[in-house]
Length: 107
Image 1 (cartoon, rainbow, N blue to C red):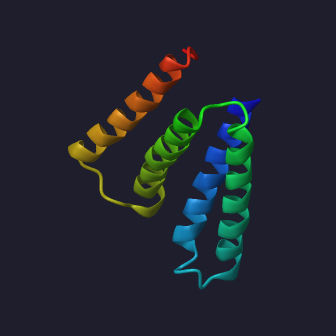
Image 2: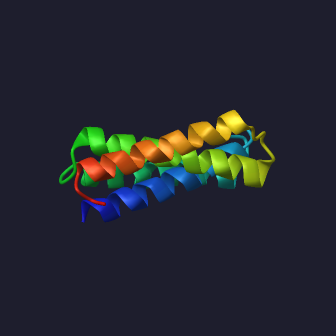
């Protein structure tokens, strides 16, 4: 169940961070409220995750995948820059997440 909770936490963190960008400095009500709700759900799900998954593994996966996916969202939705170095960095993040799964015997 911990992996399901972690997946939900990552999903809500991604939506919350996207809404943070859309909130225009927390001045737009709907995106700002979305940020608060999504981050709240994300942290509750992360807390539930930590009942069954080691904190170092869970947090690294949560932060790593969240970072990588948000970088892609930024590129696709907001026209943020992309470069070979950025792509390499994202690949390294994904490789790190995969290696953490392997360390847990998940792959």
